[in-house]
Image 1: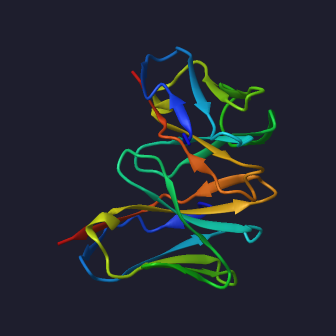
Image 2: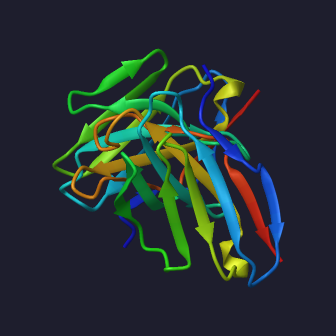
Image 3: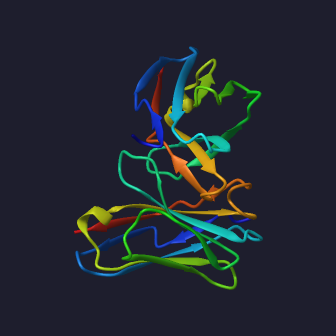
Length: 110
Length: 114
């Protein structure tokens, strides 16, 4: 079983719609959680950190459920520019490395 | 300010050859991590260096090695290249220890092994 698992998609989303997807992680010692965005053939860029209380940044909302060991990302009012691969990232302080999921591809269409 | 820079941007090698990839972190950042991203997958952790010492190593063979210089730049070396080493190699820098600080990625070096 992979340490961080994501639905690869693609999620085909009409412009203006809401899309949500999850990521599960297997190591209960994980301490930090992030969503990164990666455009085709580009480097990953930090979208947002994920806090236990949940957090929102504009149209993006991230949630963490430690009991069930999953992280979610919700995108409201989707824009064409939101089309990208969204990478779920987990950090174990003891291991001192970022562990990435395989990514969820989102395609926003007019 | 310049972000993380990597060189070269693209590289083509043949099986059995050796390659050296270079990374310059954001000014003031002391930690550099290396990742390998095979097409269609998420990045996989290779190494992490902080204050010029190796602080973490992923599940990669000994053909992979790295070092960090006094100016905090870093090199990743891969010996005896295999076809499966073809990937995007990403360098990420952070201010301090990556477990607490955000990592910022460079544009990567795309390595093709023929």
